[in-house]
Image 1: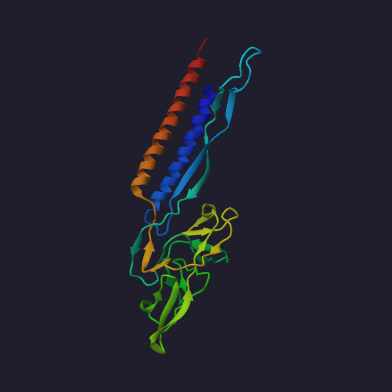
Image 2: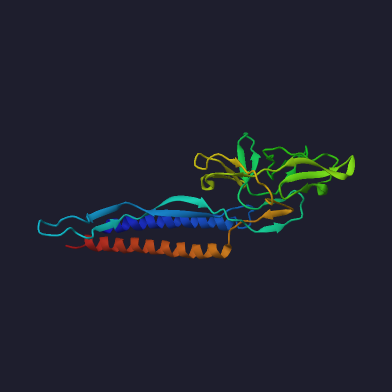
Length: 263
């Protein structure tokens, strides 16, 4: 029985260590634009049946109403991304764009794979293409004409990008349309760093959003949805749970030592 308790406590300590790792990454990204906090989920392990419910003890006994089961601990079944909206903060930069509601910007990575991000801090490259901080262009490439000042770029709430017509300053011309992509299962996206996610078999294929009205906000960025106070509370809970599991290990070790010394 002591070996079962030891095994369960070890799995519990390992699970809490992973939870602490997840919390620490959330805290580290509390100021990362577009970051979505992660949560770990757990399940119990298999059970040892010392006595099964519903078994007849003997021919004269009624079926046993309850059994005796001893669990073998816990395991991590996955981590998932909490996709609730982060706070918006104004930057006054014309190419800073916050997304409102679910979805992601699509960008083309150097290996021609498509990455997805909520971080809308865009810049211009040497060819005046709109790119991310790392130089990745949007899936639908958009360029700003050379004779147009960056301050004159207007991005509507439906993602339409217009600039003043140099030939007719009284009119605006459209130079591009921003897109938003969603997934059947956002939790299945794989994070690869640099504020980027890539699709997997688990996430399903990207779906372009048709109704873009009210989905973009120019000169704003979406902040991380990590709440520092909540993460601190979770950290304390995980620390206490870890300490309890290590105490069980220490206690069982003393019980085994006492058992071995019995003569």
